[in-house]
Image (cartoon, rainbow, N blue to C red):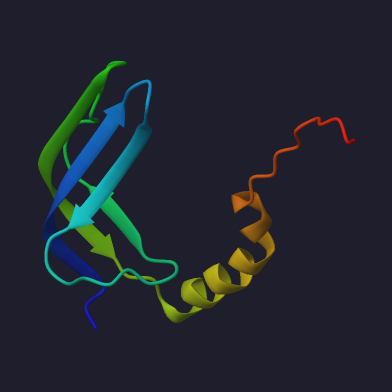
Length: 94
């Protein structure tokens, strides 16, 4: 397996009242595995409030080695709780 893969990608960034997100889609059928990194080339994309922008860029996928892949899998088990969103709403019970 190659340690780096060069490809094109599509970046979509939106900063509006309804949504604040950034998505990246790699061209081709490249699977990203734990520990892999993706470097997008070019100047940073700046989006003002109320705007949405889509751009085409070049990207490099940097494949993780065995040790980094194993460490990422292990560490992710302990960091999963950071993804949880819990909300408490005060209510009056009858």
